[in-house]
Structures are given as structure tokens and as C-alpha cells.
Image (tube, rainbow, N blue to C red; front, top):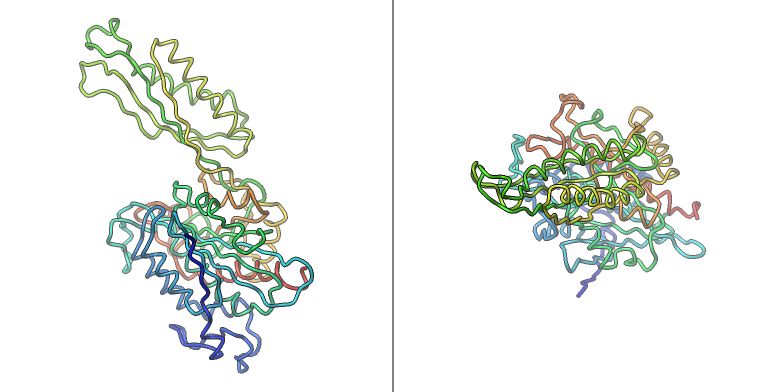
Length: 438
């Protein structure tokens, strides 16, 4: 059963509040000494609080769909805010809806901001004073994503009287290959505000790639699709001295792997690239026994739906043909994972304009090519135009080209970027929902 409830803001009653960074302008009208506080200024005042939250989350990393400690900490961070909260049934998600209070004509628009929550099963070797000790690690920066999304929530609460629409905040478990976004969609994420989002944004931090504080965008495909193939080659075992009396699955498997790489270069255009990597190979137990079967698993990445569909058709046909030629059987399982992450062209251009306006031209870079990594925010972008935005959290003393990258046990993130990340997400939502934009 879905659990929904509302946090009523004590800040609204008191006209402010105390936090790690002092008295915050939760309702801007009460902060007369400061005058109107911009979203960026507000997020800067939250910086100490957001960094502390990030480091606390970093020390309790949880993997997969069920993240009870992480969920509880996010709920604590949102406590006292005027939000409609929905908790996931099949996963530890948190969905918060903020209702804007500015007047507006017609149907009120909805936008979505997303931050993922899960960690990786990696033993941390970063050397940070707040290193995780439970065998897991926030090696992909999701602790920063949660913190900056909390900052965006608080900034938009403070400006809710300027919002002629509603905001869905998606705190999502299970981004790392377990389809957390799909679970949330199946539980009604897009309908939680009563109307579906018409725009969506998410930020992902990188431990390298660009100099610290650089926001990156790219119109069109920005991340690859990802699927897996699991192959079982079924032979007939025998003595290693008499292979003619057996049906050896090992050379068949070897030919399947080498032919796969030839297929990628000969059956697909270089202008619509495909990446295939075999990550697991298994066969046999001892040197003089021909095994009964052999196995390999591989990942496939594409940058268009057309190539993704074609690859899932051609590859099994190739493997079946090689199996017949070797007189062995083959079982093939294709595990569909994430679609291509495609940024809306206009949305990507708009993000670039907002970044340059808020932070300066030097803080934005337009990528010329996508990454072959995958991201399940792609599922949100299939339902609403939006933009998946990169943000470099590379330590200033490191070279972005050689710094230990996301998923490394040694990677480190400079969390000074969380306030700016929060400000950008909040600003994008604010501009879209401003009465003048309707």
C-alpha cells in the first residue's frame, strides 16, 4: 500500500529556522534584512548543510532497491517542508511533490527533478576521512546527487509563491543495473502530482572528465543503451586425447566471441557505433577433459534504437549459425536493461544558457560525443523532454583526464559543487513554472 503524508513546514510558522549553516531564509518574505534572496544565493547559504548531508550519506552506502538507512536519512532531511511524500512499495524510493502557490491560468504544469540513491558493492579505498566501512561505496556520486536534490527541494520551497505549477522530486534507488526507475514508473511516479511532467532534469557528477565545477550538456544521445547477453554453448564432453569423439564447446565459444567483434565492425555503421564487450568466460575444470558446456556473458551498448534493435536480432543469428557449424547447441538469453539517454535539443540548449547566465561561460562545456555508459533516467526522457546534465566534481589538484573515475574504489568527489548543482536544478524548474512562462 502506498504511504502518503504531508510535512508541514515549521519554518513557515516561524519565518525561518536554525540549521548547520545558521538561520535560513525558508520563507523569503520574512528575511527583510537580506531582501529578496535568489535561488543561487539561497543554495549557497545551504552549502554547509548539504555538504554535511552528503558526507553522512557517504558513510551509509546501500546497494540495490532496498536502502532503508538512506531512505530514512532523506526523509529526515525533508522533514518540516510542505511536501506530499510517497514511499515506494517494491523499493526504498521517496517521491516528494511541491505544489506551487503562484496564480496561473489553465492547467498547471508539472516538472520532475531526479536524484539516484544507491551505491556500489565496492570496498572503498579513497582515503577520505568519511570513508565507508560497510563494504559498499558511493563510487558513482549518488550521495552528491541526493544532497543537491535536497538543496533544490529547499530552494523551491522558499520560492513556492513564484511557482505556477508543481514539482516532482524523484529520489530513486536501483540505478546501478537493477531498473529502479522502471519500478518507480510501474508504481505511478509520473501520475503522483495528478498531471504528468512536461519537462525533466537530472544531474550526474563525474570524478574526472572536465575541470571542477564544469557543467556539461549535449543535445541528442548523451548516454548509450545497455543490454546483456548470456550464452550457453552445449557440447558433448570427452577425453582431451580424442576430440573427434566429442563435440567441443570451447572452440565454438571462441569463434562466437571473435565473430562477434567482426560483426560489430562489418554490420554496423561507424556513424552509429555499437560497443560489445565480453566480460565473463567459463569452461571446463581440468586440462585433459573436454567440457560438456561453455559459457560467456557480454554487454552491448548502442546510441540509437535502430542499432539496438538490429544488434539484438543479428547477434543471436550469428551465434546460432556458428553453433550449427561446430555441431553443438546454444542457448541465448538477452537481458534488456536501459534505453539510450536522449536529451531534447531545445532543453539541452536552454540548460547551457542558464548555466552560462548563472555561473559564467567558463562553467559550461558542450560535449561533442556521448558516453558509452548507460543511465535509467533515459526512461524519464522517453516520457518528457528534458536534459541529463553532467557536473564535474574532480578535485582541483587532480588532472581530469587521469583522475580515478566513477566506479573506482579510489575515486573522490569534491562536494563543493553540491550548492551549484542544487541551484541549477531549482532554477530550471523555477523558470519553467514561473507565471510569465505559462
